[in-house]
Image 1 (tube, helix red, strand yellow):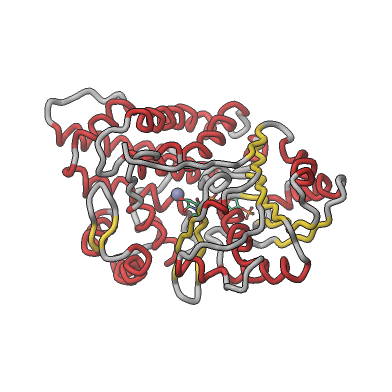
Image 2 (cartoon, rainbow, N blue to C red):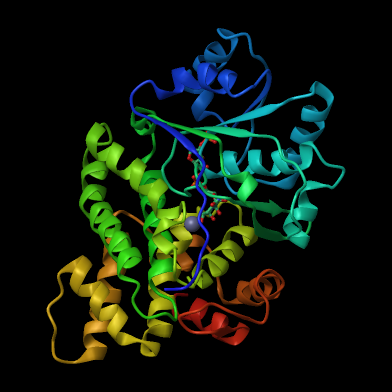
Length: 390
Ligand code: NZQ
Ligand code: ZN
């Protein structure tokens, strides 16, 4: 097991009506002037924004609002948020939404108390000296940003989508009410499930041997997701299934499932180029296509790891041939994503051979010439992984 440090300071408030406690909790933590940040329309249409606003005003917190965060959030709105925070002397941000809203809020938190443009942090990876504290009301279990120290932002002008991480960006509070996820369209539910499951795959498959305490935690989460996913797809208002998926999504990415390991993250790098190329592409859908492809390309490095995964998660019985067993585990992964309604080819995402070179240029900028851990990948390897699923 590798050495590690792990800090996860987020205070979770989980369950029915969790969002009604936002005001009381953040007031006690010192909030006085809040920016409520949200997405396109779902949180407004459901009345959630009104409820959060009411919870803040009941305890005397002043608030302003900035909506309109799109999926695959863009730096333009972040800059507007930073300007507003400075102008209105905002001291807390409440993000109401999914990964896109939370990541946009984190980007605003980075710039609000600084003279440095938020994008510079993504570009240079420099540490911030001070950030605004953040609370989250989660509406889609997927990205895990409700507890992670990461944020991913697109810059349309530069054709880039890139991540940044710093411990100070872990939300102070996460309010998680599974009922808020009842309204999710099936495609978003499925993409979220694919994303959280992928966060475990990125950690489980690296160049380390086994780390039993971490690996068994990961495997247990994978099993839970596999069991609960068909239940939420069949009945979007199944509270218990939604609750299990919501809490699993947090656990998949808050960090515990990777401690003591190197972790890989090549597939996330490859996916971010898809959604940089076309912001209409949902992160989880891109992962559903690319993960099985990455697996096929790299499994020879350590077939035993795939055999273990296939046995534990899909109950696969050995055929006596390691390569067949590893392949069966990869096929089972592809079938799991497909069973949720996720795509299996780049064509379904309207990405074609001629797009690959464009993606490789920004991939190299974002990840360097060699990246990944399970197998060290070059830019040419990346080309082959995209090609395998055209
Ligand atoms: O904008 P609205 O109208 O709210 O619609 C959203 C959006 O269209 C909708 N939605 C959310 N909650 C809903 C709802 N619709 C109905 N009912 C609800 N309760 O869902 C759509 C997708 O939302 P989004 O926030 O984009 O989803 P997700 O949480 O999957 O976030 C994706 C972003 O997170 C990044 C991804 O790259 C992508 O940009 N990631 C962030 C990570 C992190 N910060 O740690 C890690 C991840 O690997 C990922 O890269
Ligand atoms: Zn992800």
